[in-house]
Image 1 (tube, rainbow, N blue to C red):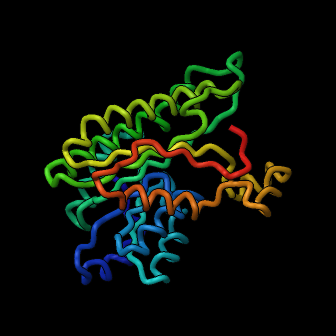
Image 2 (image 1 turned 90 degrees about the vertical axis):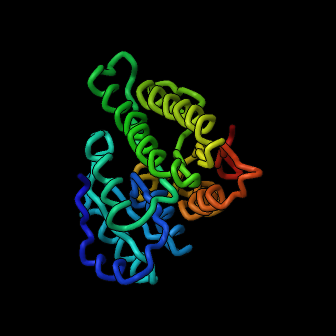
Image 3 (image 1 turned 135 degrees about the vertical axis):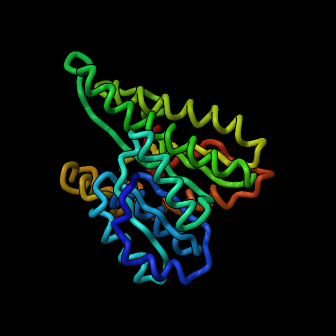
Length: 257
């Protein structure tokens, strides 16, 4: 089961009404954290998940300092039993999961000539199998309530496999197909499933240090801002069901496509 690394916040959430829960799998420092903060501002109790739970403590502290409620969990979403137990724990102890966001990465650049079966499989586990685990368990809870949102983070590789990105493209293509299948099955049952293609460089510390020549584009809105991505995730969740979006692609105004 995912270990709750924020037990100090339990008393506050226990005394509050059981607010709807936003589950964010892959709550890293950029997009995942921004999505968590955005839903917390709307009154959702955030359950943020990373493999290394201690890395969530700054995010939890930031949300709580702003008056929100948040829990951090250490969990490897590739582990089916761990995801099953995580979702059950959240539903039983914290509240009903109204939105589940799968934001796990796995971007690896390797020539197909040097790629190994072990690494290819690991990237697929991270980028697709884990998304299946999360989506299935969230759907099992949402369908009886006939409401809920499941959002998947895709990438340029979801629709276009680039040279040297065979493993990443394979995982992201598969995740997109999974999301399509789920949307067609679950939409008529009241569950909004959407896939977001992130087509561009995101403003992260990694981008700043490894790609400084691209990071300078930030000065004229030339790279994706995590807060702007998160706003689109919130808007997807808030859409009226008479006009649901399945796929949304996001890129800076200056990005070639």
